[in-house]
Length: 485
Image 1 (cartoon, helix red, strand yellow):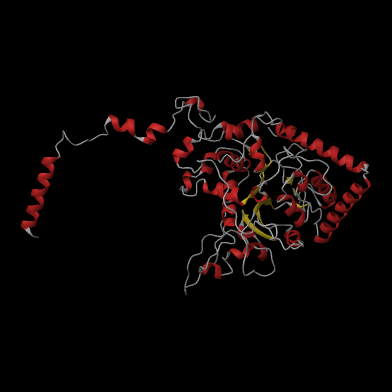
Image 2 (tube, one colour):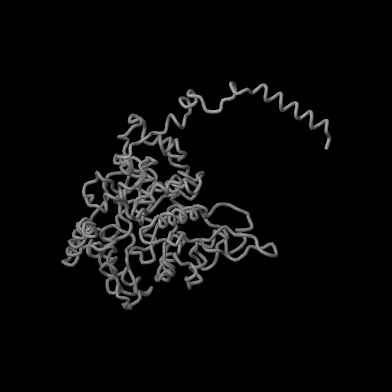
């Protein structure tokens, strides 16, 4: 060791210590630092009495914009949402592309019907299907395994990708993991159609083209226009062309299905300036007329983290339709945040958070609101028909014998899908599968009957009975929520 160099370093250390005396060194932050610190000065503080109630009634800044707290924390909710520029497929002359985002336990029992539904278009519309399975290793269908969510590919031996590792949150009933699965499905579907020359796109096991419902993988895939959430028990009650016509209709009149006896839109006179931006969310808040006043509803609205104001807490059906601009805005809310700081963490203590997350996120983005102007961007219309008349924890289950009745009721309510269809009943007994030919036959007969009745202007007794049943089911939705609690 060089003794001279060590002595020189020791002298420099002594000189620095002499300059930094105890009187000059700030061992603690001065009071003026606390006054000027932006995060300390801006973040609101609350009393324990307001925990879980989402108000600004405690200590803090009641005159501030309620979204400032979220913006200070890092969420991209300000300035107000502006529609993103649409891609080239938003032309009336080009086929539309929709993505089915499925949540299942393992296999899809009606996989054959979805294949037929996607191939029934006369205008060459495109359909993709992405699936998040609770138990992906139990999926027996090779067609569905190809469309399961996977972890990012890793290089294996010989400069090739190793076998896919399926991505699953293994959600339980009503848990936050269902919401996380929906967000992951949406994020994966947003990547379909992006131009990429990576090695991943050359491998058929990982390419984004594998989600397309086609017999062979297409060479080029357009970007997705709208995203539809479905479950394993859903069945379409419309053809693909009817579904596209309703989703991309500029007015409520154009959106009406053949046989629809009423218009459930809250503002039938609204004209959509750009139908590609419109989402279907059957949403309500606590001030909406008809919202149940029971413990289940109260807990759902109040158990959201207090950082989200009460006025921006909305609830909707889990099975919604999101347009591409709205999906991009929701994903961009916390895209740069770490997983334990993303917005879904604010819904950890909410029962069935999948009914609350997306409508609340749209409200935070100022897309969904009580004002009439928001109706130009969001259609308050149910997408999937569900029967809650039994007043139980789960909706009623239908079999092949109920197909004709449910298709007719769902179409008259303006719905595009219906659930829950199952080949087995609640007791585990096999009650019969629904074949592709049977589904097509029922759909054609119901449509033909509606056209004939409309042409003659005669309403049959059976149709009036179906309308009465539909009205009773809507009223039983409120009663069913009370009985569940």
